[in-house]
Length: 562
Ligand SMILES: *[C@@H]1O[C@H](CO)[C@@H](O)[C@H](O)[C@H]1NC(C)=O
Ligand SMILES: *[C@@H]1O[C@H](CO)[C@@H](O)[C@H](O)[C@H]1NC(C)=O
Ligand SMILES: *[C@@H]1O[C@H](CO)[C@@H](O)[C@H](O)[C@H]1NC(C)=O
Ligand SMILES: *[C@@H]1O[C@H](CO)[C@@H](O)[C@H](O)[C@H]1NC(C)=O
Ligand SMILES: *[C@@H]1O[C@H](CO)[C@@H](O)[C@H](O)[C@H]1NC(C)=O
Ligand SMILES: *[C@@H]1O[C@H](CO)[C@@H](O)[C@H](O)[C@H]1NC(C)=O
Ligand SMILES: *[C@@H]1O[C@H](CO)[C@@H](O)[C@H](O)[C@H]1NC(C)=O
Ligand SMILES: *[C@@H]1O[C@H](CO)[C@@H](O)[C@H](O)[C@H]1NC(C)=O
Ligand SMILES: [Zn+2]
Image 1 (cartoon, rainbow, N blue to C red):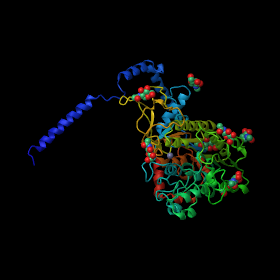
Image 2: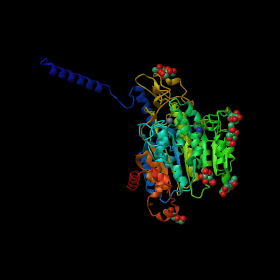
Image 3: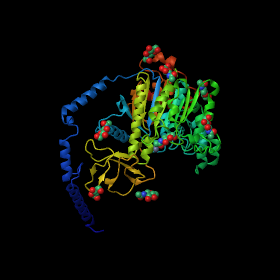
Image 4: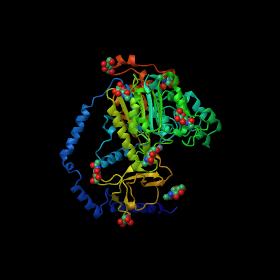
C-alpha cells in the first residue's frame, strides 16, 4: 500500500468538493428565470397587477377575516342523514381541482385562481389515502371496493378482500372473501338506492356499488371468453358484472341505474347495438321482468329525450343506458342523444326522493380519468367542471339538514401545474419560456402518457383544441394514475366526520354512521339523537355481521368513538 495514498485521495476529494461547491454557488439557481426579459416582464406585470385591489394589504386582511368569520359560524350538523349523495370524480386529483377552478373562472373571463368549485364551498374537507392491499397506486377497482364497501383489496379486483388475487375466480366466489356494498346497507335500512355514471355502468367504479369479481374487465361473458389470462371454467363459475347487476340482491334492488354500456347487456346477434353477450341473453329485457309482478313501475330509457319526458313520480325503477360503451365527453357529446351528468343527477334524485326512508345515491364523473389517461387535460378539466355543476345542483335540490353530500376521488393522476406563470395566465397555455433551451412549455404537463416525445417547440400548437394532448415525459400508451392522497369534501349531517387524513375505506363507515345504516347503525348515537335512533334503526342482515370479524368491528367502534 502506498503510504501517502490515503491522504492524497483525501486531498483530491476535498478539492473536488470545493470545486463543486464553487460551481453550485457560481450558478445562481433562482425560482423564476432572471434573464433581462423576464425581470422586465415581472416588473411590468406587478406594476399592472391584474387585480389592483390585491396590492392593498387591507384587501388580504379582509379576505382572511371574512373567511375566519365564516368558519366560526359553521355549526356542526348532527341528527341522522335521511339521504346521502356520494360523488366520485374519477381521477380527480388536487391538481385537477385547482386547474378546473381556474378553467371555469377563465371561461367567465376571470383570472380564475380564486374561484371555487361547488363542493370547495362545503364546510368540511379531508384527505384520503388511496393505496390498495397490493399496490402503492390504486386503480378504480380496488379503490371502489374501499370507498363503497369499506374494505381494501387488490388492484383490478372489485368487491373482494385482499385474499382474492387478480382473476382468482375460486377465491372470489367464497362469501367469506366478498365485501358487502354500502348500497346494500342502505337497502336493508329501507332506503332507495341508485348508481349514476357517465362510464359503462359495468365499469370498475359503478361496479363497486354492486359486484364481487376477481377481474374488473369481466363486464360481460364475451369479455371473459376473450381474456387470455382467464381460466376457461371461470366463465361458467363466475357471473360477469352485467349479470351480477341484474341477478344479485344489491344490483336487483337498485332503483336507479344510469350511464353507458348497453353492449354489455345485449346479445352479440344485435349488431346494431354492438352487443357483446355470447349467452344470447338480453339483460335489459330481463331487468324489466324483475319487478313486473310486484306492481312497481320499471322504466328502461336509452336517450336524453326519453329521460327528459320521464314521469319520475310514477317510476320506482329506472334503467338508463345512453351509449353502447362509455358516454361522450361533455364538450364533444351529441346533446340530443346523451343527457349530461347534471341531468342524470337531477332525474336520479327525483326518482329516489319518492322513498319514505330516504335514499343513497352514488354518482361518478368518470370521464375526468378517461381524459387524463389520454393526456387531454382540457377535457379532464371540463369534466371536473361538469361534476362541480352536478354537485351544485344536488345541493340546491336537497337540504343540508337531512342530506349528506360527500365528494371525493378514487385516486390521483400524473398531471402537474408548473412554471411561474403570471396571474391570469391561460391555464391551457404555455406562458413561460425556459431559459435553458429558449422554448416555451405548457403550464399543465404529465409525468407519462401517449403524448411523450422529445422536448420540442410547442409555440405553434393549438393547445386550446379540446383533444390537445399536453406534454408528458415517459412514453406510455395510457397515462397512469398518481398515488398521492385525494381530497374529500362534505356537507350535511355528520359532515365533520370527514375532516382529517384517513384510509379511503373509512369513508363508507362514516357515511353509515351519518345515515344510521349498516355498521354505523350498530353504534350508539351521539349528540342526543338516541331518542330517534331506536325507531329509525333497522337491523342489518346477518350477512353484514358475518362478513365483519369481531376484531374489525371492535377496531371500527374504537375508531369512530376516538
Ligand atoms: C327527532 O325526531 C323529532 C320528531 O320527528 C324531530 O322533531 C327531531 O328534530 C329529531 N331529532 C333529531 C336530533 O334528529
Ligand atoms: C369573454 O370575453 C370574450 C372576448 O372578449 C367574449 O367574447 C365573451 O363573451 C366573454 N365571456 C364572458 C362569459 O363574459
Ligand atoms: C332487449 O330488450 C329491450 C327491452 O325490452 C328491447 O328494447 C330491445 O329491443 C331488446 N333487444 C334485443 C336484441 O332483443
Ligand atoms: C323489486 O324486485 C326486487 C328484487 O327481487 C325486490 O327485492 C323488491 O322488493 C321489488 N320491489 C318492489 C317494489 O316490490
Ligand atoms: C310529481 O309530484 C310532485 C310532488 O307531489 C308534483 O309537484 C308534480 O307536479 C308531479 N309531477 C308530475 C309530472 O306528475
Ligand atoms: C345527434 O344525434 C341525432 C340523433 O341520432 C342526429 O340526428 C344528429 O345529426 C346528431 N347531431 C350531430 C351534430 O351529430
Ligand atoms: C419557437 O417557435 C416560435 C414560433 O414559431 C419561434 O418564434 C421561436 O423562435 C421558436 N423558438 C426556438 C427556441 O426555436
Ligand atoms: C412510444 O412507444 C411506442 C411503442 O414502443 C412507439 O411505437 C412510439 O414510437 C414511441 N413514441 C415516441 C415518441 O418515442
Ligand atoms: Zn383510470
